Length: 179
Image 1 (cartoon, rainbow, N blue to C red):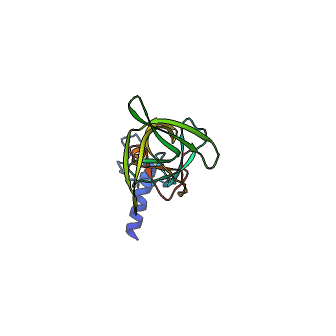
Image 2: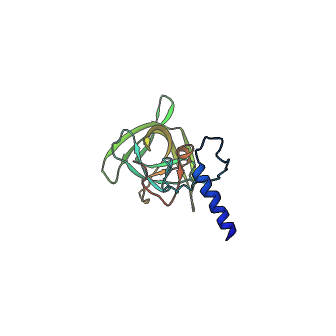
Image 3: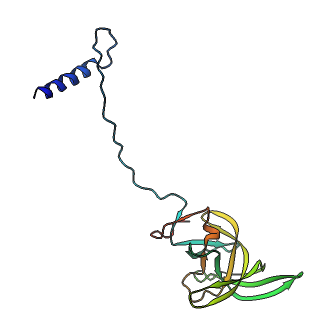
């Protein structure tokens, strides 16, 4: 009890003498406990995306639902009527893209960057790689895509590391974080 009274007296004295500038005021050191901040609700950083996000294949106006795949090196795109041809001694390809949700269709002719072999679970598949203009997460840029028939897949586009690296962190518990 004496200790409690002594602490109360010191605290009372420090309260009374706080701000006193006179030499008669006793010198009292008061150490206040640190102020605890209330933690803020966690916010998702702008570069965190989900497992499914929209991508625009320019100049098309409607977005494609794209599966985000950190295991894929190169992004892939559903293409119809894929036809290779030669132009000025170089390999080119013509193809159509049809947005299944909106019905929007666009025909493309692109120079073939290379033909690559994709390893899938049970088989290997040869695909053509082209450069496409896209809008993803508010940013417009050009990136490489392989062309594939993705009729049997739910998503018409697959976004691989060639687009994700340096742009996004993937949180598979989220979806549709981009506009």
